[in-house]
Image 1 (tube, one colour):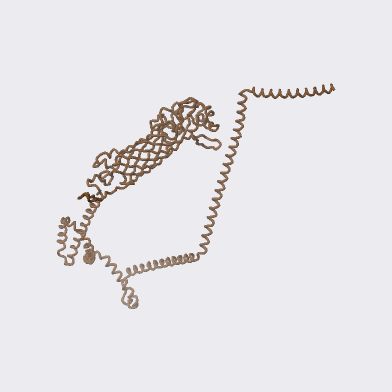
Image 2 (cartoon, helix red, strand yellow):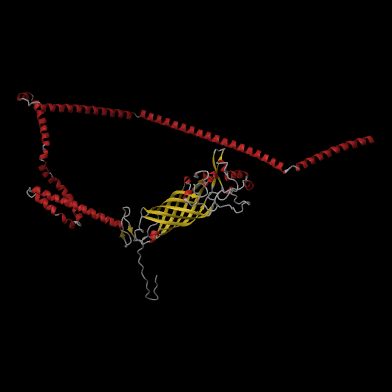
Length: 594
């Protein structure tokens, strides 16, 4: 018994010792894991992140490649279908035309008959030409040959008949050649018949010429000259010159009438509603009317033109936003719009307008002389932007020449300068670009949510995030040309004074790139690091560093537009009513007046 107890206790102790050793090892492992340094844990996390990023990038590349392959296959299939359809339609059309031509037997018969007729006409014309030549040759020979004897003429009685008409023809030709000497007598006889016809036309026109009788007395001496020359002629011939005189009368009356009619028509065109009306010297060969200005005029107009901006990006050697030498003419864009305006007495007006378009700028377009030029640092900065702008504004128009008296030339000239000023509300959204090696093209990204200059970060409390819709002050001048009373064409320049320097998302200085990981997502942080500083891509030796100047915050951005405007008048002049008003009078207190 004691031995059994001893053996059992020894086995139990062994088991307890093994269990104790196991628990000690587990505790040691836990303590070792806790004693790992923070640096090892960060390295481990970085390795895991790289592995996940590499897998994500690889999957993205595969998906993009598949998408490109599918797009190319679809394009090829569509091209093949288009070619097949085009070939099938061509074949079908050719077969249809051939079938119609085969069936159309009548068309072929008509074609043959037309060709036969043409051939017969050509042959007949050739025969006629040959016969004519032979006939002319015979006539020439007969003229040259001596006169025939009587004995020969008697033998051929038929020949006489043929020769006589030929001699008559020759005589007629000779007489026609000698006619110019006898034309004088014939011309005197012929007008007697023709002038009777012309007299009727003169009688029809005479009743219309009652007004001009007093002005034709100056042309009477011409009648006497014509009558004195022809007094010795016969009575029949004396009538003709008198009729010629009547012709002269009609011509003179017509010329005078045309002048009077033109003057009347001009006066009718110049007439207007107002009694105080005068004619002014013509401008550009067009008559201008002096009249009192209308009280109200409303116009609806369309606008089209170009736009540009003065800011921190692009430009030339003159790094100053107030000079034209800092403009980037390569980035000109277009503006479109429409407006509704109302004028009071043609001098002061109010306009509601809506304009939309794009504005862009890039440091790649900067012009510099050499590397010492301050514009070279702008070129190395290598930033760009674009933004869509939509603007609604309330503007006041002032026409200075319309404040003068309406009887002066400047008030009524076709060219009218004017001034613009007012208030506007506009929206914008700047975007920047970077080169994607996977897509092999530039990709545009919104810049406002990335806060590239530390907007809204605790490390930069003075840089607040900007809004994408703000107020502006439009100012401008223009020149209007009046095409007609209802249509006008004008050219105007309008500049917008802004209250922000972030129209191009560039204003202050570079920030530390580690801040993007703290305040942004992983994807946004990577994009922000790329778009914040792209100077290394141009010149690695002169790359910009954090803390250096990125823009100029002393002066706000400025954009402008030069536009052509076509305005059309909408309202019409209302005529005053001719109602008469009667005063109601009460004769008795009991009477009721309505």
